[in-house]
Image 1 (cartoon, helix red, strand yellow):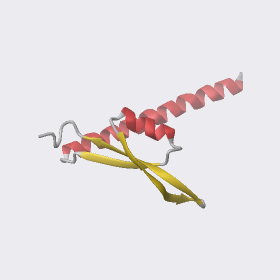
Image 2: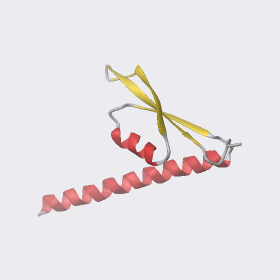
Image 3: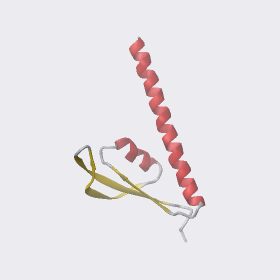
Image 4: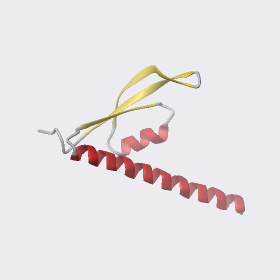
Length: 92
């Protein structure tokens, strides 16, 4: 019973963190548009499924892949390039 309660608590915590990160990204989008910025770009390692899914939910699209561009702990990683174009700024 205690293990299940711990897992349920961790799951609620994880959902809370994901919701917070999405709110922060939405705030960044709103702030960028308020300041006339019409394109946001990101580079994310392909293994970071959660980040790529979040970006997709917030209107980012994949525009490319850079091979062996980042090295972490001796391992080379590709990055997925994403961007979000504003629907409010730069649409003339």
